Length: 437
Ligand SMILES: Cc1cc2nc3c(=O)[nH]c(=O)nc-3n(C[C@H](O)[C@H](O)[C@H](O)COP(=O)(O)OP(=O)(O)OC[C@H]3O[C@@H](n4cnc5c(N)ncnc54)[C@H](O)[C@@H]3O)c2cc1C
Image (tube, rainbow, N blue to C red):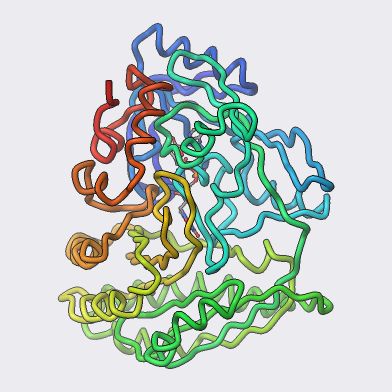
């Protein structure tokens, strides 16, 4: 099926008007769509759930919707392996895995992304001993720039698998992914509001002492919300439905949206609004399935920049961001988020080779973010910060390549799979440069 439409991402940014939008239902149909585009000289881009904040998934050429590549091909509870279509959404995948007694080792804040889209941009959750989602990928099936189907796993082209896991959509269209899963597990989650200075002082120890550790800080506040979650075999006690609706829907979404609008529009209201939001945070203590604890609904739309830096540098870098956010002419009425992840060995992963802290800055959709995000990025530059590939940033190839010790390995794989730059777009032109000959 082919249809013409404008492409907008989750934040509502208009990111192009694809010439054709095929929605293949198999690897063969995907390969045929790429081959057709190649014959017509059209660029190609796969799109998952459109949940990236920048133009990484955009094209005016052939936009391959992966929604129909959503099959669960097989789940092997003994081996802890799941083979799934690239377009399956994480939420659907989590439910299928849970039914088979399995789970993904870690998850980000939401479950709306496609598995291939999330993997391509190195989507991560939080946990000092846990690497991002791409580190769970042990096999991939990819259609390259000529329409050829390539399989890579630990037996066939392990060199390619290592690189292709974080492909930034520039190596081909992934049709199938094999994931390493773990036995399903429950988490004991405790959310509290604590003095920011104390949390930052003990940051490294806290990150190491908890399976999952993160904090949210509203600019101007002296306190922050801390979320800790640890594996447990105690009986489940999920949050009662009403309390869940109060905290996650009314608190984190509806009231937050209303107060955020007030704080941003009414001069002088940001301070009181921050205090009100803080007062509205109630402590939570529950035990539930991992995927239910780790992900939440996000109704308030926003723009986001997120940087990965060396974990040890977090307290110092955060202090500088705190000064920036508190001193801006236009008050920021949206929390900063801090998370951690383990080092990995994926050439274009922002966590490559270093235990990582992630700092994310947000502004409500439609609000200006230039001064805030540029100032934030300047600070991150001082720490060799690597931006999330699916979020806003102003870097280019010249500034990024030196921050990735194995940039060359990625460039080589790109030259092999896509010598004609079929999967290039304005974003990859800026951040990856042209395909190396
Ligand atoms: C509300 C919200 C919360 C978020 N929370 C987190 C979080 O907790 N942690 C985090 O790290 N990130 C987070 N993100 C960012 C998000 O995980 C990434 O941007 C992710 O890439 C989006 O997945 P998607 O399926 O929407 O991919 P898209 O945005 O559609 O595409 C992203 C990239 O993947 C490529 N791609 C998609 N499918 C394929 C395929 N089949 N083959 C090859 N390439 C493909 C696209 O071409 C593009 O380059 C969040 C985003 C939002 C909007």
